[in-house]
Amino acid sequence: MPRETQVLAVASVVLYFALRFMAAPILAAPAARAYSDHVNPQWVRLLDLLQMNVVYERCSGTELFTSNGRRILDFLSGYCVHNAGHNHPAIVAALKKELDRCGPAMLQSHVPQLAGELAQRLCALAGGRLRRAFFTNSGSEGVEAAIKFARAYTGREGMLYAKGAFHGLTCGALSLMNDRHWRDSFGELLPGTHGIEFGDLEALEAALKTRRFAAFLAEPVQSEGGVRVPGATYLLGAQHLCRRYGTLFAVDEVQTGMFRTGPFLAAHHFGLDPDMVVLAKALSGGLVPIGALLMTKAISDSVFNSLKRAFVHASTFGENGLAMRAGLATLDVLEDERLGWNATRMGEVLRTKLREALADLELVEEVRGIGMLNGIAFRAPDQLRLRIPYEAFRRVHPAMFGQVLVMRLFRDFNILTQVCGNSFQVLKAAPPLSITEPEIDEFVLAVRQVVETAHHPGEFWSEALGMARRAMMRDNDSGTPHEREGRL
Ligand SMILES: Cc1ncc(COP(=O)(O)O)c(C=O)c1O
Image 1 (cartoon, helix red, strand yellow):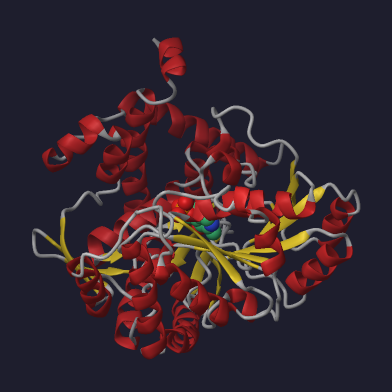
Image 2: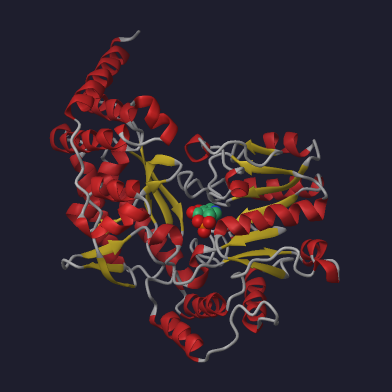
């Protein structure tokens, strides 16, 4: 074994045992007691651990204000929900007006006019052959709908997806994600699903040739997968191959849609003409649950093909008036304020400034992104004095390094962000699309300072050690009930 590897192995073992014996309790903040007791205690403990368990009193545009007077700049946007900014006054006003008019809601026995209006606008913006919408309450439900509509249209059962994807956590959507973290302990999922490498057209063609697959679902840019922007020709090639083998080409634009990357859909960057598009998150201005599956007329007609089947796929809250009104008002805001244009312009500014500011830091691999969907990717440093703590902590928990960055940005610089859900070495930079240059400067300065501290082993890594100790304590009493019994 090379000497360096030996040193790293010893360091991780020493660190592991040090943490086990030094594990310290986490004190839950009293304000979160009811949530902790009756909803999810581990979530509260995680926020405590990250020192992010604050009480937000008011949120507006790109800013979040806490009960103890802090002003936090949002560079996460609830994972691309707040494209129009928090509580945009025009969307809030539209919702109040909708409530005040006391119109029909959830009758399940009328034609919801607003749903027609929103569908028409979404299809016009999406373009191509997309003529119909099916409304849902979330992105996962949109993916579920895509699976059902694709099966009905093609008469095939299989579904293809790209590895590294995040499509949602309901059983069907989860079947289209390979990451074990999300799947473990939930048993068998949907049969007939198959993951291929993102960007690999040969693997895609080999799978398509079997003619078992109803659809290939892909995010145009893998967001939780580490903000992976594909080469210019990959998606067009994938669409072409899907057509050749009779498989539908579907894009998940739950994060990338609604002008996040500049144009209305990221598919527009790549000149795509998909058969289906899943939207959600930012579609209702971050105020009302919503999702939509856009598709061709033929696909929609394959499900709703007779009176008997007029509501064979439906959801009680799917076309509710508040969500539809919020969707229409959100489109007005995004278009009137030209937020897609701002996302393109400010995205360039953000990436340029970040690249300049981080150029000399060896832990930074690259800054990448498109529009206002950006990531800072980190890598193992070359210098042994940095490599040892970096690798040792990564072996204790792969997210540790990123979470210390997230914690420090939040605690010391009032910046909210997170690492990617399927790629912990990538820090996200995805603020509301109304972000301004001075706010970008604030973010860049904070990131520079925090990442720089990681290059001076003492302080940064002792903080990581403290966090690891508390995390260890948390993990000791977590796990499935079955596993906990085993430990006792
Ligand atoms: C790309 C993508 N698709 C689907 C989903 C699932 O959306 P939801 O959480 O609304 O069910 C998410 C959620 O983060 C997502 O990022």
